[in-house]
Amino acid sequence: MTVRIYLAAVQLLAGPPEPGDLPVERLFVDASDLPEVWVETERHLAPSPGKAASFALARPLGLGFERVVGTVERSVDKQSKERVGEGDR
Image (cartoon, rainbow, N blue to C red; front, side, top):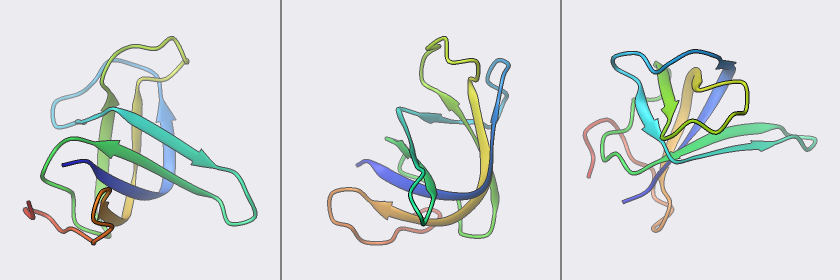
């Protein structure tokens, strides 16, 4: 199950993954009039909305950052488009 996690107050950080970082397979930045940032992970546990969360790219890509941190706005199952909460499968 792919979970899309929308984030607020996002920071892209250099440095190796830290313990507790969730793996991220994809990172999206929508810089339109209503900007959004979201990550996609294959993890089944999504952090609850309002919680700070940290993520690490699944592999180094040479982009100048390896980690993504932010506050969770909402989490959605990519296939069903249903919201998911912490511990949902």
